[in-house]
Length: 301
Image (tube, rainbow, N blue to C red):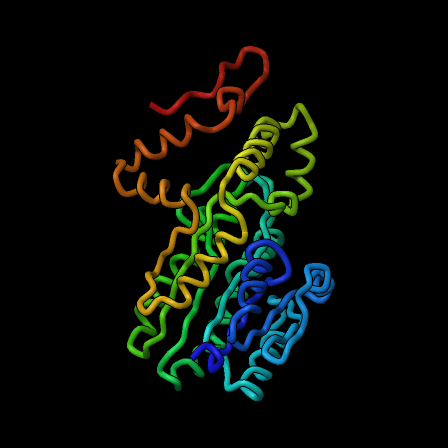
């Protein structure tokens, strides 16, 4: 019965996390909604409040003591976590050359290291029960990479690999592992993308070698998100459906474009696949050297 199960969701105060939180609050699951302390007022703003079966807790997923405190509370009061939904994440927009080690580690800390630590903490209880669900919000960025999104895609590719290994490891205990893969979603998420100091400078300096990358990719991604029929609420429905499936798959494309890209990866030779996507980049012929005497960058065959 749903009332016997406890669900923990990270990053529940905005976007897909908030839509999933609101959907869960309308069920009989026991729910623990978490977000950074500074984001907690968003729950009240969206009419999400504590109920006998709903708790709202501050959680910075990068802090070990806060992660442990949430798990300890769930085990003490509600018998542990039955369903973990890893949703918290951040996005850096920068080409590889514009990301220093500190920024790269910050990206990985939230998107990869934190969810893997959350999983590590809930697995002993799930193994003891012989059941459990781990659902992590991945991304189309975990199956394909786009220019100016290298660190983000690296974090999602890492999640994909780790979860594939995890799927094999915990299957003997009846624990199901799933990656929900949204593509472009009509939300304000692209407005919260973080720039590094170098990428921000490049976007605003005409003479910067990567200027065209940013001024073309940023509005391009924004347009695709605004045009997408997918919403946080539609992705939340996929999350709940995955949570309730008897045998959920490892990878669950959550939007139409995610299914299209997955299909293209399966049917196209890798070289043709990358060539196709390269040609689809916005104004790609303007990228690269612009000094007098230089020709446009060569196109892939």
